[in-house]
Image (cartoon, rainbow, N blue to C red):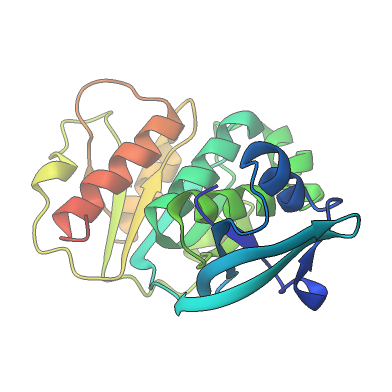
Length: 238
């Protein structure tokens, strides 16, 4: 954790040990009274917390605000459902890279059970969004939506100036040479078995430009991180 984040500020400036962040401060960071750490509120201020004392009730601290929210990048990642263990990494890394919106969508070739995984049904995914922000040392979290299919996604308002489909089935131009990318931009990354022909047709007919990350077949989680890094670089944001 490069910042300790809270949805709401702890009561009475005390972080209880029953909170995993309190345990992290005490057992992982091994901080003591007088030590400081980065702290912030989700989508709010960040600053430096200094430990005043530690007792059986928890960690008592004082807080000095140093900054507000760092704006997220005008990029949306649309990613097809993959195995939950892989999706956890995708969520974490996408947030750490600073996307402003995450759309997770069912796909023709994706395993249907992924959409009802505990990751979604219990709200566990929120932990990985938070982990990504804490890795980045920032407080902002992206908007998030879970969609049944590409068909459902295409029924939504398409407000992006550029929409990019990553696909290496055909001889598509490389993403690294894309020019004139006006914000906001959407990047679509397929499932483990790739997009179906039906979905490719839907994307192209809806105005998506098709780009590639090269001739190698990448894991979805690799394609997400690599694709976002290349895209943000072409936009002058990295």
